[in-house]
Amino acid sequence: MKKFLILILVCIFTSHGLIFSQQKVWSLEECIKYAIEHNITIKQQAIQTDIQKNSLDLAKFQSLPTLNGQASHSISSGRALDQSTYTYINQTLSSDYFYIGGQMSLFNGLQNYNNIQKNKYQVLASQQDLQNISDNVALNVALAYLQILLNKELVAANENQLNITLQQIEKTQKLVTAGSVARGNLLQIQAQAAQEELSLITQKNLLESSVLTLTQFLELQTPAGFEVTAPEINVDPNFVVSGNIDDIFAIAQKNRPEVKSSELKLTASEFNLKMAKGGRSPQLSLNYSYNARYSKPSNLPGDQSFVGQLKTSKSPGVGLTLNIPILNGWQVNKNISNSKLNVEISEYNLEGTKKQLYKSIQQAYTDAVASLKKFNVSIKAIASTEESFRYTEQKFNVGMVTPVDYNAAKTQLLKAQSDMAQAKYEFVFKTKVLDFYKGLPLKLN
Picture 1 (tube, rainbow, N blue to C red):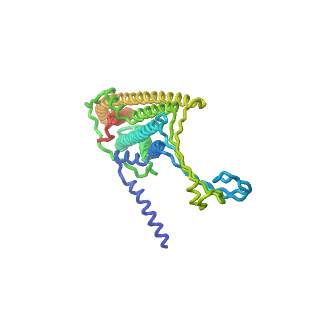
Picture 2: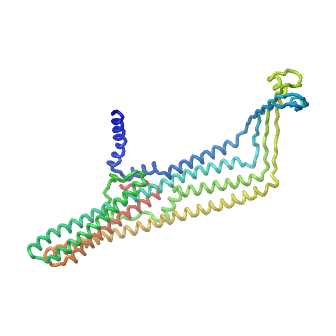
Picture 3: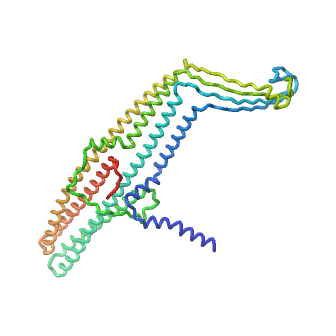
């Protein structure tokens, strides 16, 4: 019984988070923050950045002196060489050998330095890649968020049209009962109501699909109960898109992480080329060692104890090694050639990144101007369409207009409302994209 109660309590507390998330109403800023914190691609890039940091640390540690120790123990029988006296003895011999030593690079064509610089710029580039991924996630979330708001407006417009039709069905039913209009009028309006109901269902499905899209960006398990805040969005018909494409691009190419990343990767490739050229340089290193031996039995005079033999046989050493590359299978030259090609690739990547950024700004600016024009035309269209519909509705109520004409006027009004809503949200999104390229945060108010 206790286990059963504990299980119930666990289920209640586990489901509490789900209930809370379902009851929560999300703002755009909250959606963006949550998506960035839970996006898998962002987490993967963060790990990749940590890997690059480890590579930088390793590059720095390569400049440090090396130190290694070695110990060995051997037993031989019969005629064997006593390493202590370098004489042969014919008996069982036990030997121990101890060594500690290493080397330190004094000069290697600045390869270590250039390797450190290359990895440093790769770390900085990886950090900018992480920021770029976060920015793309934020834009996608903003677009999905605005799509939900648009679909909500379209659902409301379709519901309004259906309610008007249902009211006309009720009025027409009374007129048919009174014998004022033919029954065919009623059937036509009922058919129109069925079509509008189907359109409403389709639009609601689109709304559910847009909610699913946003919840997937947020990595939520289910879209059930998910709601977003619907701030009042008004577009000033006299609004003027500020700046121009070149001005926005000048700001963006200085601040955008994708451009910074390409620039940093180009610098890293240049240091990689310098490191490859360093392979042609002579390399000077300092070597140092200390070793000692112990043998049992031993013919070495003096103290035959373990410590005594180690002191007697100790052999410290220090030396310099100069390595001059002459012919190494053409590896150095090919490394330099490939590094030069990688520099060219990085230069083209930077150029391509800037061109793509300019095209994106150009497209967003053009779309913003076009959607504003479309919105202004839609305002005029709705004003005239609403007036035309009211006039048609009055004539229909007194039997002067057929149901076909009435339905056509209502459909035209719905289309005008839908066109204006689409133009409004497209304009809002494109202007937010332009603000985003200017370095401004994504906000709806």
